Amino acid sequence: MVHIQAGSLSLGYGQKTILKGVNLCVRKGEFISIIGPSGVGKSTLLMALNASTAILRGELFVLEKAVHNISGQALKKLRSRIGVIFQGYNLVKRLSVLDNVASGMLQQVSLFPAMLKYYTSSQYRKIYEYLKIVSLEQEALQRCDRLSGGQMQRVAIARALAQEPEIILADEPISSLDPVSAKKVMETLREINRNYGISIVSNLHQLNYAQECCSRIIGLHNGQIVFDGPPDVLTREMVDHIYHGERREQDRCLPGGLPFIPEAVVA
Image (cartoon, rainbow, N blue to C red; front, side, top):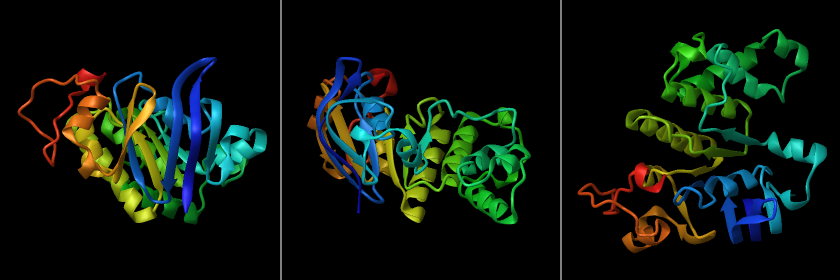
């Protein structure tokens, strides 16, 4: 089943074109990472999948809906099927972990019980399931402003899961995290992808995590897709091309012999 289909797609803001001639097909259950230097259009492409970027030319279908020609209730319904994880978490930090995760269910519950924070036993079971997946069941009643950055990002992942999405978009989900927390977040996303079959599209600066955790990598350069394939066929030469050859000489290498691209180089 195809979840995302783009043809001759050009994206931008106002009359400024950021990406041009994008052709893309994403099947159900893929875990994709979009890579490339800052400003190349990673977030532009990612957020187009949620109808948050202007489509200048071409066609884009997400979950069989024509994003290039959608609005109103149809757009709202489509977005309810797509979970979004942000770099800045977007949590209500004065609320508990449990309440933040439950907010992902707002499309499924009526307003009055939601305002009272009243959850059914079935909803409690689902919330616990999602918290267990992100290893935060012990912190369910903790206020989010008392959590670490990595924990807050995992709360955001659980909240996205509570939405019961068919696609999750992760916009630089680990860019502000330390290496240990970043690894945990990426492993959590990989587990969700495998166990729930949810298609995940993320954009990353950290090439090593893209190779370790994702099933497919899309490389952007000069406003176009220049690489689209599994991590094990991404060559050293293609990495150089994607990042304009800008990398520090490092003794460290990625699994499979690829050079490590420090975030400072590509930011």
